Image 1 (cartoon, rainbow, N blue to C red):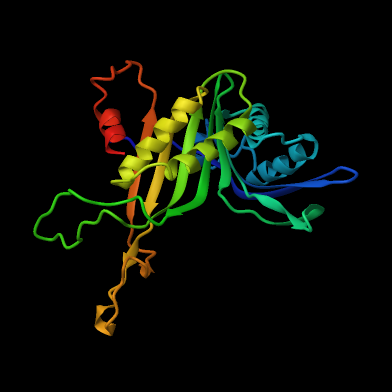
Image 2: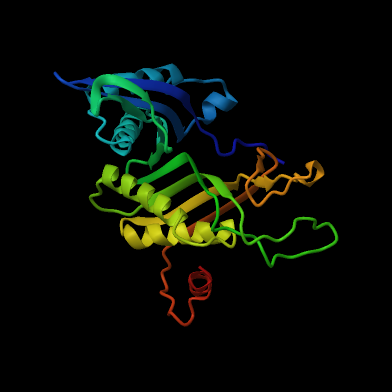
Length: 300
């Protein structure tokens, strides 16, 4: 049986870039973590130790900083695309390049209702992400959000589930629902305002999380995905990962106290993990046959 090299790639990860745009009266901060991965004809390096034609990963790091000097970084998607195109041209043995960027938000300090021109604090509300992949003929652009912590103190339950010999969890129609949203969505072709689209998706996620009763995290995942696709025609599909950050009602009866759904133990592990993709179907479903969507809407 012959032994051969399978799929492989190499690159530079965790490249930390901070760029300050200095206007006369106002500074802006762009704080990014960038991963670069290249695919191509790298068999000689693996099998023969021949590095001819291989771009050093140190060069990849330097490239990120050099291109950032003159790129306005209007959006992380456009900067990622710039990097992909450069690496495809720079590496003679590179067939495909992938760049993943995480943008870490900073917010201006404010005093007396006035926002500071050049002083910031680390923002919250989720990191912005993008992954751009290209092979010279076409490219794929994916955007996303991660570390978006959301919680609602009611409007969630867990009932009617399968019960067998090892089931101990009691049913409830009123529980805390908390999760850390990680969502990634794929853009279709066309001229897209990536900044406006990302902010619109984030707002749709937040609004939808709180606008319904959640009989399960699965239900909420689908409802959010459906809302995003209905609102944003440029998005083809969205995939979400929603860990269920459990808040367990603490038993105070041993202390002679009641607990009318007010004191909880917030756990970190283990936790339920619900993941799924909501996408556009090539075959529209009639209202009568809309099994999942119709059932979920009636249940909300």
